[in-house]
Length: 70
Image (cartoon, rainbow, N blue to C red; front, side):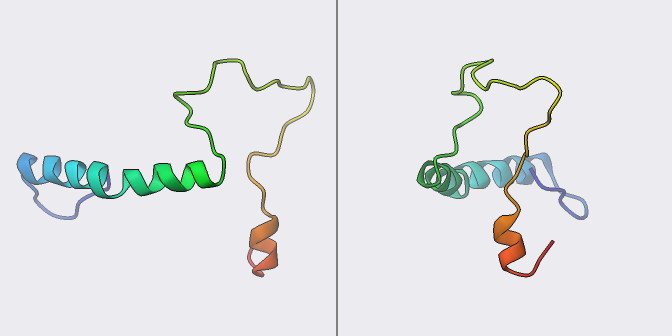
């Protein structure tokens, strides 16, 4: 998951992963549904058509610009 600082036992690492899976992931999945962001494991491979010679924008940076950020 995240880089733990200092000596951590295997049990503590596993506990951290379990807590992340139980406490954080459900919220992330719910938010992804709210913003209509598909799970990459549920998307059919090749379902996103790519155009020759161009690169699609990966992220929409407009909200960052509205906040005065890059």
